[in-house]
Image 1: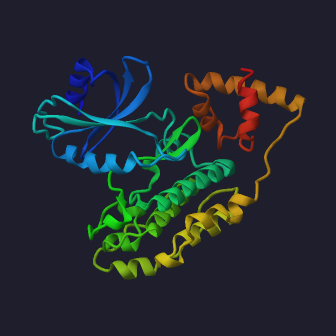
Image 2: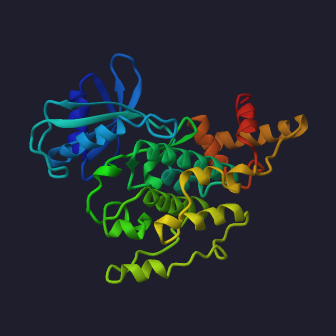
Image 3: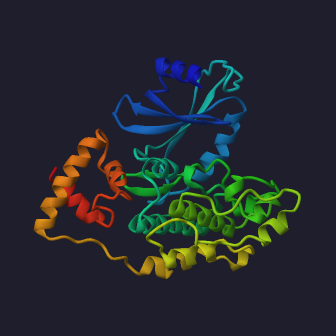
Length: 337
């Protein structure tokens, strides 16, 4: 990956300066790039060799997805030359590029790894954002097929679903069993029967991870798939979280039903009590605000460089007196730093 990255950094990508690599996969890699003309920063998914062939269907679907909780598709194009390298197989011909909105905070996986599990308010916002995205995709006839923390990004404090590499229009889904990430896949994914409810199941697993820090179930036994799934039972009694949220636990159970038709659909998720009942927020008076501001100033020095949104996630779930602070309160205090 580094060989190709440094080549592209020197050569540029059709009017863009390549700043740094963000990740890699079987298709190629993702890099942060900057427009030479406008100075705007984007994420570029750069695919080589056989991976390039996967970008066309991905572009066709992602370019149709226009929603505030879906990573924005900007454009797609080819660059003239990709060098041979041992890490990313390449035919030495063109590279395909998908240009996307750049999300500065990173993925949900990044946030959990760096800052810990999400607090009550963050879980509400994540659930609402992803349910809205799934509802929109259902209206457009699209099944994502790989909803997971790695594919949920935070852009300007908004959770957004990205990576449509294995997404399909529902009418085009074929019997390609096993597409997705096994720990987040419903039973029907393993036998190639994808429905809109398949994404709901994966979102349920994702919310469990954001709530507890772990996946709810081990990998299923490939020799006895149906029994492995049918015997699954959720147990929240040992999650080790002090601020248990019964409404969220109920919602996750409704999303992780074995039978697809029994899973709660996205529209009903948005009307679930977990999202319609507001948690108690810490709204503070002027004296408390001054004390909290002093505390935040000290924590900001420990935090170092980063965006406001990154600092908000840094504060979340720490025993600093800021855990239940609303985003509105945090923003007003941050502006005084």
